[in-house]
Amino acid sequence: MPSAETNEATRGEWRDLGFFYDRDDASKSWRIAGTVHGLRKFARLVRDHALNSKNDSLSEHEHFGPYMYLEIGTWSHPEITSHWIAGALRDLSTLASLIESIADRSPVGERVSLRHLFAPESPYDLIDEVQDEAFDPAREDPQCW
Image 1: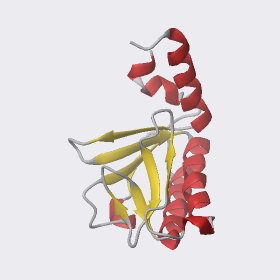
Image 2 (image 1 turned 90 degrees about the vertical axis):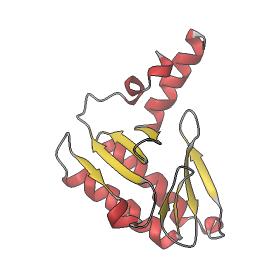
Image 3 (image 1 turned 120 degrees about the horizontal axis):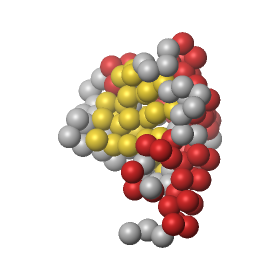
Image 4 (image 1 turned 60 degrees about the vertical axis):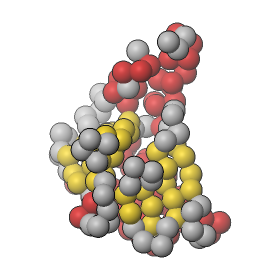
């Protein structure tokens, strides 16, 4: 069992990240939950990867979040797997724009699937959930309470 200090640090990492993520292998989906600001922050992380020319080589990747299992990477084609969310840099830039659009246009409570728009042949889905402004991403993580 983690210490109270470790749990508090993990809660702080979720809040700094600005959104909550989780992978559900039973439903084969990644869930990204956040406020408009939090989802836009997720989009910014994806876009920053896409705009960094050092990430142009296949398999370049970055990990995010308290547990570091959310991975954004460079691949030859768009894909969403249990391992990562990846694509060519131009594909990831498109994904970032899709996420921004969802954040800006979807009502609170909306769950938007992105697989069909980003990587239709992928085994996993990417679902963005728009939360209200009171949303605390740390509250979604039962392991840090």
